[in-house]
Length: 160
Figure 1 (cartoon, rainbow, N blue to C red):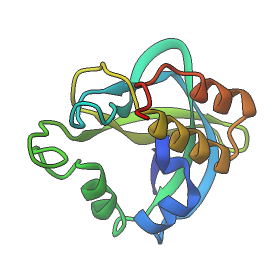
Figure 2: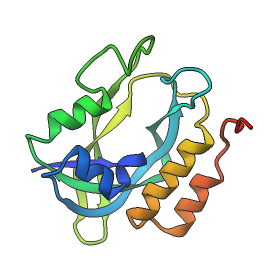
Figure 3: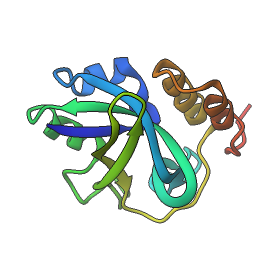
């Protein structure tokens, strides 16, 4: 069994059903000692990409999926983990896989893997991105305080 720790917009069960249709949700939990942050990667003005960074005392809400071997290459491709040229013209980054430990109420502590942006931390997400992250977290059953914290983050100014 390969357990994938989804965060960001991959918390949305409908999105994961499209990206990994044969991989069931196991449970939700927390990555202790990690924080949700943003890194370089998208064209200027479109917002930074969600990623994880190790940070003692912090935690990130995750959905844990039993990722089937035939779904993994599709998810790798979607996240750019199968290539080094990034997300399109001019992009120089992709996600890489790291091993993490997730704490859950029903399974205890489990070893899983997550995608981490292979780029420098920095930049701000767009307001649209934060709204998508918060909506995905809410759909996955994240506590209201976690969703509120996402929506309260600093973001790029909204163009009128």
